[in-house]
Length: 246
Figure 1 (spheres, rainbow, N blue to C red):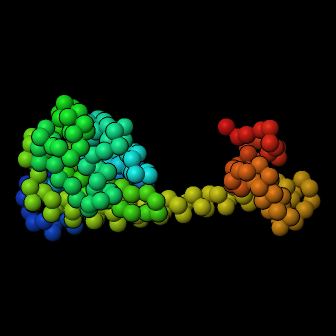
Figure 2: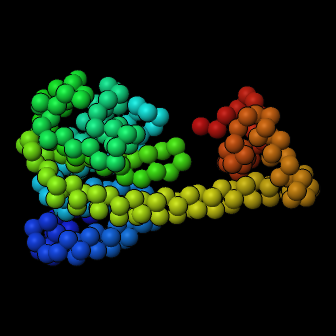
Figure 3: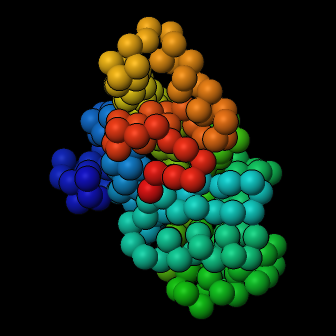
């Protein structure tokens, strides 16, 4: 999905009601609900198309309290700026995740909260930024980061619309991740079942005995049970301490 596709109706940030724009964004994000990466890209495109004066967007996950992992971006710039924050351990994305729901930077070149980050981001061509906490799941947090080349690009309207979009995006992303976890769980159960079947046929044992065999191998080798099952189904050989699946 692209920003141009989002603006085909002639509405969005250029016109039409905010309610209509948000409804359209919600529908478009729902279309991508079965795939996490597609949902992330759709959120980034929606943000640029919907939030006034947003020129670029990046979505990042924050791991621990300093590592920023870029997950989706509309150009190389957001990805590089997220990487800069990760290297320096400072920046508005980190503050949006850990201390504030929204962080607005009106003039990156004059910013003093994160002096090293601000100086380097300004040299990269960033004039203003606004970052929103995107979602919370376990120990992983996310941020929606918007960029413009000129200082003072984001105003109160940008902030209000961006916050509404981030709320829609969080729901869509949570749904996509839930479905992905379900699919992964089903796939894992299938491969464990296949491994049990191999052991039952080979050793003439029951399903419970085969599962106990896999569990003991998992404990003895300090590896996940599903990894033991994948290796057994891939190679036909029982995993040992001297052999690891690539």
